Length: 471
Image (cartoon, rainbow, N blue to C red; front, top):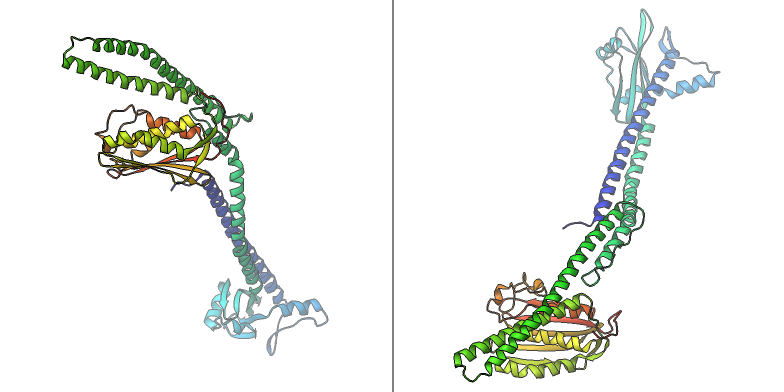
């Protein structure tokens, strides 16, 4: 399934915005974690340097001594909750304050190794994450190793709150971005949709229409201008073809009439044998077929060029259908075809009675033409929502689904299921389509090979914009 341009634009915008937002979130989270970690290391370093000033050696060992009269010293010392002092030579523990709760190794060998390689590390303990710093202090012969731990609970809480914030608001931002980009895509494509709507209104009957230019000289104006140029060329070509068809039809009428007159005069001769008379009669039939073809071509050319205007007046479709069926019953009976009309109630619409009669007549003629002996043709007229429906159903040869959409094309005769079809110009259904379009209706065909065909025409009660003029 091909997505619409608006959907694709919105999807691309949201995908790009989403990647940028997620990338920014990841980078910002990492940057916050790095800065908090740097701040914690710096604070730990400053705290360790300060504690060295409180270490005192005496006959009882090592103590942390501060000036009780100085609140700042007391506060600074109280900030160091987790520390330990070891003898640098023996690795023996001299002083410890809460450091054992971190669960770090205090073996003399491990402590002695810190003398030459004091290290800072981040460890996960049973009571949370900690930064641990080691440093050597004292004078020669009385050196010690100070290990200090700083809780990262505050930093971890800040990171957790920030990650929760991102997880909560990033999806909200993506949804808001999707709605905003959907609206923006619609706003940006609105002029293109307007051009498409205007282009759809241009058909074979109004090729003189052109797409409006906004004067912005942008890409959309370039597209509209190119379309108008193509439309102008198409209008010129179609006009020439219509003129050629009309001129050809007019020019052929005179020689055909002359030929028919000569043949009719020849048939009046009394010295013609039966074979010659039959040949001349066959020629008259072929001339009549050719004349009908020329008349239909000329009529369709006039109709498509807009020279024929449909009148608007109430038309009783039920009475019209019944009358036409009565006229065609003898033709149907001659081929043992059951032809009937089902119009239980009076159904009327506003339209051109003459052209609607031709519409029904062409559909019935088409059904009789492709229905074999012993078949059935039914004309149905009934009310439909907002209008009326005319249905012609037969039990004829039918047609394939691939061929059905083309049967309204001029001169189309390509259905393999109709290889034995009787002669015809291939214009009757084209004229039907023009009549339906002229009444702002719709026509649909349902058919399968060997199962007949059903033509359904829907006509509105009151077609819009109808000119009240005869052709």
